[in-house]
Figure (cartoon, rainbow, N blue to C red):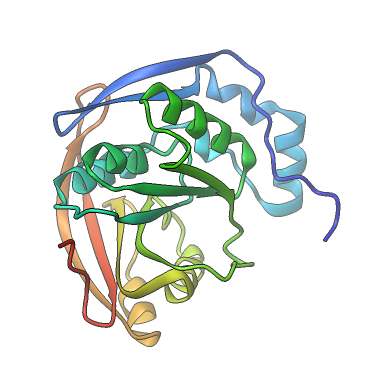
Length: 232
């Protein structure tokens, strides 16, 4: 492996937002001026190298959609989850507030993971409940989770085989993945790709509101391995 360091190193002002998601209050550490990253030399070099964009610094519709869905689940005790391409980690943080015991927040960039750690502290979640890790979907570790969360991870069709590959490799037997996105995301290849690797699938409409109160519409994809998942 070369010396490339996956870190967009945001150096602008920061803020902590207070968000209300399905009756749950979440404090979210985030860049105050995320647009700065679009002209950052490190990001521009990374983009030339790997077509990378610092999408993590913005809250996208899928994050609010998934957070609503996660808040509505009846999580049992001792549940561990991984958030895939977590960005600012809103869905995983809501999951912790909703009863998930521990979340491993993963991203391709180290920078958002530092914000997630600050958010964990701001919400009173100790290090035993919040873990962060770099994850390149093309180079997967030998690990599995009973719950995998993913918001707006299917924004381009070429990402579908990568995400399906992660789920096939890292979703534990009997586990469930909750993947959300707005209607603008083209996911017509998702169901056949999942069936091709033996994963179950259902998709349902979902609604949420963003932090400005704007109505959002999208879909929640519930994906399971070997017969689905029981929270109890």
